[in-house]
Amino acid sequence: MVKVTDSTVGSERLGPSWTDSTLVTCSVNCFQKYSLRCQTIMYNSSIKLCTPGSFLKTSSVGALLAPNTTEGDLYAPKTCDNSNNFNYVTSGGSSACMLVSDGAMGYDDAVNFCSSLGAHLFVAHTFERLALLPSGEGFMIGLTDRASEGTFAWDDNGETISTAYSDLLFKTGEPNNAHGVEDCVTVVPNSILPSGNDFPCHMALFRFVCERPMIY
Image (cartoon, rainbow, N blue to C red; front, side, top):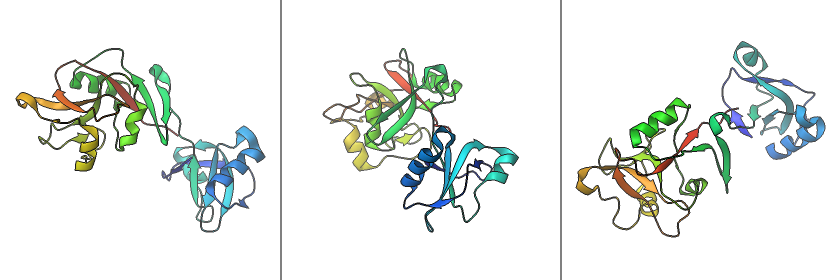
């Protein structure tokens, strides 16, 4: 479960609160008591208070049902919107709501395609997250140095990668900005050696993955 930070989101209480040692045991006990009726929990880590909750409510109703100071924080599971053939994928401690493209596109076309589905090109702020991608072929990812040559940034938030991350990602001699036109990035997931390579963004050479934000 993840913390819901929106103050206009809340849930109906299923019953009285109790004390529980951790957020995890709070969640487990809620499910044991209420089965599938338990969709959310409120937990105050300071006083170990656990409050069982039903389905999330939003807007004015949600604001009225938001947890009070004593109840602590609201927690709910995140889910994947499976429309348009998106799938929930996990690997280790990473997860994402993803759609693998049928064919290759240039970067701009891929960005527009993903955007039309409420998604963005796949990003991997941690190196381990690349394991979510299908193995065996190169995929274009949402990482470019278009804004500043040599400084690669993720599409979703503009965060730049560190030198250490770059060393893990790119194969020897890359990125090299060959002919001054290579600003986009492809990787071969789960390869033994670093596989990242920069290539011209306008060229439709690789398939790609759209990533849709998880929803409550």
